[in-house]
Length: 136
Image (tube, rainbow, N blue to C red; front, side, top):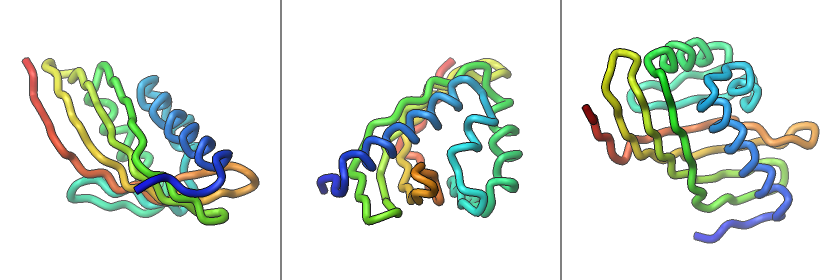
């Protein structure tokens, strides 16, 4: 499938994902949560949480397990329809655990977005793990 919709909106959605990834790599919770609508849904394997106020503490707890996170995305299709959009992202994660050891994860996000006051936000992110490797 090929991306569809105004190039300006597709670029802004790419920048949203880049902002998200940058916040993860810097462990910057304020920047991370600024990319979501208040009523957004975050879905991880085995767990779905509604509302940014509910899933932000979950993100903070998860991030505390890592001393380093390399977080890189590759775009699949982005489909823009007015002030809403959907997109697919393939994520490569290089994780250094606080307890020792490293992990490499390849995953996929299926996203939904909304444009509010000229800015794009995540309204839903559904993450699935495609491959996980534990390293020494």
